[in-house]
Length: 452
Image (cartoon, rainbow, N blue to C red):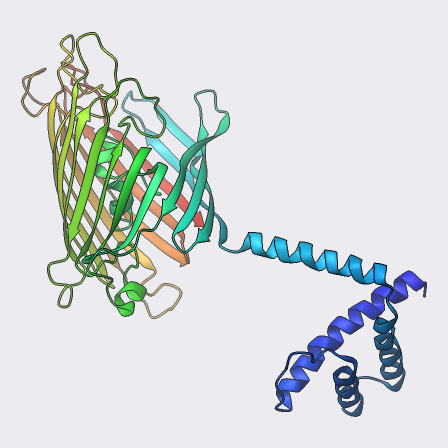
């Protein structure tokens, strides 16, 4: 064997010997101590391995001889090894608090769209690359690029989240606070999506209606009310927004959302408060309110349209079922597109939504509580005061199906969805249009959520 090959083999054997030595030390009741790698200790452990016939006579003598060579390293070699160890220490330190993961939605759907055209396609509907770094117990950073497909079919990366995260100390009843500075979460949708877990199927009620989306440039802060619920609830039901008496979030944002440039000088304050009235008796019961007030993200000579949301939701979660019921009244939307034609006055809209999910019991542990049955119903009227048409301008959405959580954060879902457009509905997020006559939008969907 060449000297190089022999050197590598010796290094491997020394590594294996070190592992064996550690295991043997534990098995014979010893405890590794500082300095246990000196020559005397190595000789003692080698002797034990030799006596137990783990090492042959030839291997024992050869390893003893190799072990003595450590004392003959030159000063230059010692310095080189020291520099290598310093670099490794710096690398390991830089990796402390670093998390890299993904949240990806893969979709196969077939059906018909509102223009009557049929479709059948594979899609990537979400492709997050989450990179998080915890610098100190009170300071962190997150950047999340997201895959999106443009009209030409090309896949591109855009930023969804990029913010610094600050953790101020508890302030009495306000606990576990975090502040996001940059492009961060708006107060509502992240909260709802941790109650209704099927974002992989489609957007939530108020986002589907075209009112706003989930992230924006600005500054926000939130936290829990009165500490956290017990470990049992967080393990069996949910550890998200698990404040004992509820949670809250407030902030000020551009208003247009994460994929829109700021077109006016308006800033939009937003706020959410969620209360658990019976944390000991019914910890999963919450009453939530979300509100915002500002202008639509336009720059019109006639003035920017109003943009307001008042939304209330009652929700319940336990080990077996999840239920939400919500009602919203709005004026306009974040794009400034839900307006009376010609006047640019914001339309008053209203809608409501119900969601239900239950885990199904099975004797097979691979399916027990991991196979879910869900259903949802939305209704949204973009012109509740009939300013554009004389009525019949709402839409109704129904969907439901089965979801199998086959691994932590991994899910496959089979669903059916249909949207019924009234005669004067001009499309989601758009003003009503007299006798628009949109066809029902329906699809059969298989979706896979992949995350780590």
